[in-house]
Image (cartoon, rainbow, N blue to C red; front, side, top):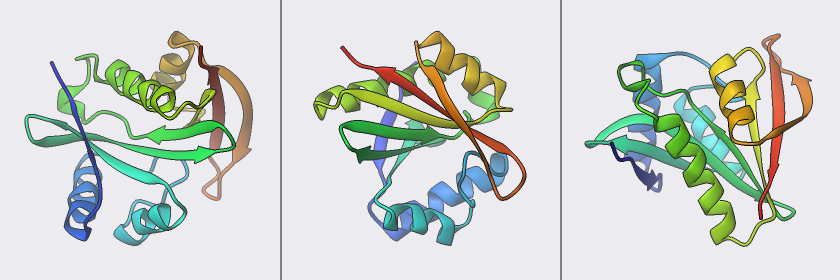
Length: 148
């Protein structure tokens, strides 16, 4: 199975990304999942990327360079596509993106109650740095992997 990573550059792509998540699940990480919330992420210099399989959005990735590191967060995989190894392919894409930019590490943010993402971070060699309280009462974890 393969994935394609399509950067969001137009407002209709932003709408498609919003519709994908709206149909699948609600909030994740620290993003308010509205078109305005997604636009706010772009305004804060996050790169939004649709993760596609056979022309269908199956997840979204958010990337941002910060002081020699690549900050990242991503949605869970659309339910019908879970179990296909897509989460691992997304991690590989994020790490490859950091290496291509000559960055020293990748930082991933995920909710601490998202056991799949926490396990994925641990499997890929990320170390937990900190946790933060979100406005909705959830906790956001910060995980880092140093690249070679």
